[in-house]
Amino acid sequence: MTIIADSPNTASAANVPPTTRADLFEWVHGVANLTKPARIEWVDGSLAEKHRLIDEMVEAGTLITLNSELRPNSYLARSHQDDVARVESRTFICSESEKDAGPTNNWADPDEMRSTLSGLFTESMRGRTMYVIPFLMGPVGSPVTRVGVEITDSPYVVVSMGVMTRIGRTALDVIEEGAPWVRALHSVGAPLDRGEQDVEWPCNPTKYICHFPETREIWSFGSAYGGNALLGKKAFALRIASAMARDEGWLAEHMMLVRITSPEGQVAHIAAAFPSACGKTNFAMMRPTLPGWQVETLGDDIVWMWVDENGLLRAINPEAGFFGVAPGTSDSTNPVAMQTLWGNTVFTNVALTDDGDVWWEGMTKEKPAHLVDWTGQDWTPDSGVPAAHPNSRFTVAIDQCPTAAAEWADPRGVVVDAIVFGGRRSHTMPLVTEARSWAHGVYLGATMASERTAAAEGTLGELRRDPFAMAPFTGYNVGDHWDHWLSIGERLRVSGRFPRIFHVNWFRRGEGGRFLWPGFGDNVRVVKWMMDRLAGTVSGIDSPVGLLPKLGDLELHGLDLAADDAAEILSVDSAEIERDARDAQSLLTLVGETTPDVLWRENSDTIDRCREDS
Ligand code: TSX
Ligand code: MN
Image 1: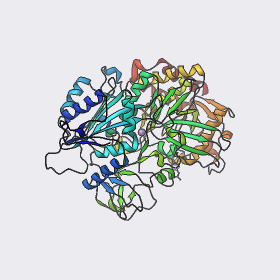
Image 2: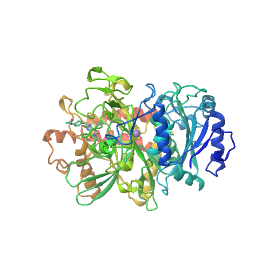
Image 3: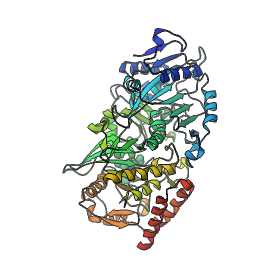
Image 4: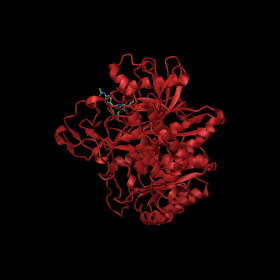
């Protein structure tokens, strides 16, 4: 049921919202009174509704229809040139106490921020449609599934939320049953005067992405891009959900989730957290090079986990789609993603080919002779600029993924057998190491780090600590997040059925700066060692950073890998590990009194082991 009303104040039959919940009804009308939209639409999530919105956006120039022979039912959106990514400097945690936001978040006083936002949202939807999107994070019936309602004035957001989450009637039914719901308010901040011609990508140079963890609210103003605007994703499923999870005893994490099956039929579920530019999506869709191995995809970005009644850690993917970075995705780096994108895909800020298809840097070896770039300009290989924006994206449903696991939408979730942390490290960290204990694993997650890849975002190669790959996504004090992980460990101790924790580094370099490890589908060899550890068929070699594989236990057959290189990627230099542990102390010190003592002890134990080793 789509309900369209000409004015929020018109008491016509068509204006009756499809909810009996007074809190929802009152919020929607309060927002309408503040933002003064031309009309209100309750989104029902139907295919007819999606097609109508797409047709309207094609008409308005927001979407370009791609060649239906090459890319059926697929569209290209080009954003405003200053609205191309999440803006961490404009992202705020508005907790009552500044200490609750911690040293890694921007904090703002909730009352002051409410007053600022109320000013910005005043009449911000004038001339536009206000869409009300009930959405579900997780499948109906899981103990951690949560519901939200996003109000937005962007049809692009409605269609994208329809891919990334479960929207409409399904979610509204959960609200009708009495579930608490998260208020997620979004405006592009570009009111239209009567008769004013709209632009293709309305937005506002002033941007705010604000989270109120105590009242479970999100207010986002000025941007229509990705995590700034699709509020189910980073804002809800990570920042607000991490605060809920802390209060309620579960985990909301920035992880991918896969199911691995060995040729012998051994099955394991692995959740992995990597900072950006480490290939999390590629790992989630890996095509293993070892014969008989199978990798199935459950998620590529966010995992919600809880301890079940048997003391097992279980996980779901709260999302229903992929919002993946396009550049670098190709038939060689991620053939599964390329197959997933066959159609029914919204692309944002990629280049347009002359035959009406998409292209991005890294998609093909040869660059096309002519393109229209992401800004709408003619492009040739001599143009000297990228044709696709480096943060250009595809938005596509998980059920299009040929390797999607049947369990991806199972409300019971899957049992997590292994948790993997990683980073892009040209030295120091070995290919793989297994944590000595839960606490040591939490230490590896808390101190994980990655080298910067793009000169634009700082000094190239500079090491950045990114605890649990959650630096921009924890909705509370990062030290309390570490403590929460330790407390989950205490709950798992009751059953003793801990997932093993590993740390991987696909990016170690040898002399001349070349990568020592082939990566990609060959990473299954590392996964095989993890599964052998889970089965108890191999032992590890003790080292200052954890247990290392014995050279003979890592399956290297069929690899063009020199014996020296194999030994080097598995080697640990105590002096390097000690230097790294001392470097990590600045983070533990920054987090201050909130840093759990246990992590200081893991840090000093690491240094002690380095001393014993040398
Ligand atoms: O995603 C990557 N993975 C994980 C795949 C499952 N990437 C791409 C990172 C950017 C997002 C990798 N890059 C990986 C990796 O394991 N490893 C590397 C480094 C690397 C790059 C190229 C080659 C080898 C290693 N080899 C050739 O180019 C022939
Ligand atoms: Mn992410």
